[in-house]
Length: 362
Image 1 (cartoon, rainbow, N blue to C red):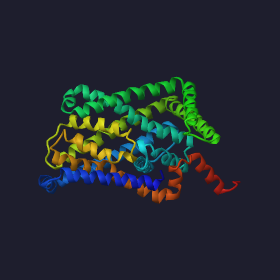
Image 2 (tube, helix red, strand yellow):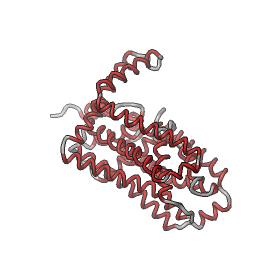
Image 3 (cartoon, helix red, strand yellow):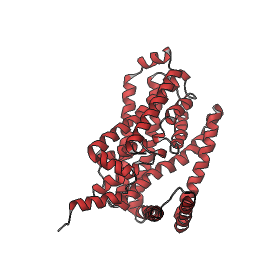
Image 4 (cartoon, rainbow, N blue to C red):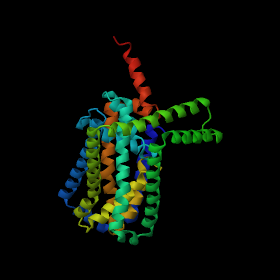
């Protein structure tokens, strides 16, 4: 799927889901609540969103220092918005990495270190959620009693959490075994005619070896020195602050329209939901995020407010960031380079193109 098609699919799915939600849930009471919403609280929600951007940007700065590189806070903001944009146009929210690695390379950060920085940033969020979700549910078990749908989701999340921890432990402890297993799967892909050419097989093997080596280098860079461990700890603290701020947006929005709420309950539901969205196959989890948000938020508020609050929540936490990402892509990278990166051109290949364009150096 091309960059344009991914963005179009994201917009169409979001528009369709939002239209259905509005048609099925909005009534006169909804409109009255929106018209009398606390404008100062809405402004506060916007301020919290900006704070989440700063925390995310700070993570990039801390992780770059751990890798003996320097990324400024403004550049960290650019990388944050690029991640939102890349996630919006790819399934499983996986497309932000190539954009970030390329921009880091253009700023003088080696490609291997760029991959390490972006990989750890994502892993921190996933691992923190894998701890927060079961912890919150143990502390507040009544949440699960309110919805059979949520019980099923939590079971799914626990299975994914366990699989994630096992996978990470296996790749660190037995990297060679993991490479062999992955190559066997690639060869099975050829037997099933998913991969046809010998060249594709060879490039897949090369990609696997390169990415796995970068993955291991990532941990060495972060743990080989005391300063690296301290910066990693700082990145972890910023990750926690980022998630808490993100989960605070919904309670602020509920307060703005006069809805009662329990903060722990709102955080628990959002944490479970966010973890699930990482594994949704639509671009940027579009459609599922809006519809699923409306269903889950129905546990916190009346149905006539749950749908519209899901849309507003999505606007504050995702749409604004994606819009900023589009601006960065158009102004900083250009649509052509962005399309090449999205279509699978490795950052290394883009770097070689830059070197060729520069010509022989004295």
